[in-house]
Amino acid sequence: MRISFYITSLLFISFLTAWYADLNTQNINDEPGSQERKADSLAQAEKHTEAAELYRVLLISGKIKNKEQINRLRYKTGNSLMHAGKDKQAQPWFHKVLEKNAAMELHNDAMTGLGKTNEYTGKCDSAFYWYLRAYKLVEESTDTLRRARGARNMAQLLRVLSRFDEATDYCQKAVKLIPGISDYKTEANIYNETAYLFELSGKLDSAAHFYRQLIHISAENGYKKGESAGYSNLASVLEKQKRYIDALELKQQGLEIDRQIGDVYGMMNSYRGLAETYTLMGDTEPAIYALDEAYVLCDTSWISDLSGIHLSYYQLFKKTGKTANALSHYEKYTKLFNRINETKSREKVLELLAQYETEKKEQQILLLEQANLLKENQLRLQWLIIGALTLLGLFIVGTGWSVIRHKNQKLKLMKTELQHFLLHEKKVGNSNQSHQEIYADKWGLTTRESEILHHLGQGCSNAKIAEKLFISENTVKFHIKNIYIKLNVKNRMEALLRCSEN
Image (cartoon, rainbow, N blue to C red; front, side, top):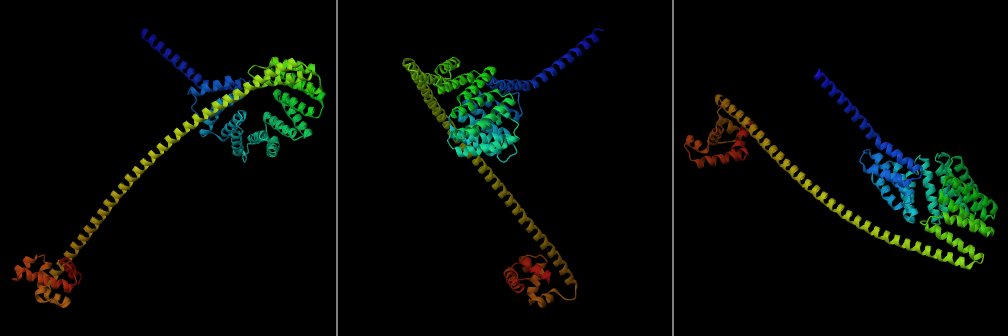
């Protein structure tokens, strides 16, 4: 009983262990997918820093083995860092996607990311390079979304570079592709960029039309930020048309949307926009109130916006004759402006140092690559020499074997012919006609020469022939020489073969 109890217990424990291991394996296998979904949710909630960190942890965990998934996570990491305002940190992730054999779509997205990060950091030439590469990659494809997005990005950058005609061409390409786009944000961006180009060129009615399109598509899809931007931008067009009341109403609508979504930066900008409109209307008190609200909302890290607010204060107080207040805000504006310039200078120096280090590393990598290439070439040369020597050895062995085989065949043939000749000699010996008579008839040999040729056919040496015929060996040699001349041969083997042939 005890034994059966122990066996049953062991089987039950083994079953529980296997079940737990299987469950744990399923959890481990599912963990990367759930982590990625969690990071995606954070990115959608615009918590981009947290999303980027989660993507990065997932990448370095080593749990993802599929190359396509790894490249997708690299792009998502870079994209989240870019949206978090960490453009320089985002760029290496985009470059990693391009270094690997990623899919065409990911390649295009990574190039677009590099274009945006370079544009945001003021490197317009680099931005243009990456935007153009991204656009050319999909220009002939059926991917309407990426084609439209690429055309819009090119238009925006060309507009920044004051190349308005080219920017307009790209905008027209993007607008034509809108019917085939299912991404409302891209569609909204295209309308916004097209409207802004018309606004810059003074075509205010066309600009107003596309801004209204932006507001419509954003409201239809619940894209509150796009709707708020549309109201603000349309208001700027109405201000140029001196329709200040309408502009003010639109900006207030934009401010209300920013409040609804809790967009502090958007609210701050909306209050600044209201202050500008009130200033244009000559209504100073509401303008100062709006600036006060903007100042309260403005984070101390938003130095550029803060300096802009102080500049607006200075201009308002100067108009109203409040010189002391105007000077106070001008001093604050000047300090912030200088700080911005110092920060830019510092960033420029750091950028140059980073560029120097990068170039230095690239040179070192290039030198290592050249050294490796040289070693590879040396190895190739060594293997080539070894191969050539091996082939040469095989050729020599083959040639030698062929020559030896040919000589052996020739010797066998000569042996066969000699045997035939000896048989023939025996037949001739048995016939009525003597060999001397035959040789004399055919080649004009003398009796002595015929005798010597006969003995040669019997395989006798010069000394043996001399002994048999009772003549000297020199006399034998003399007669053999005459035989060679008459038979037109060079040695006794050829002489015997000649006799055999005839």
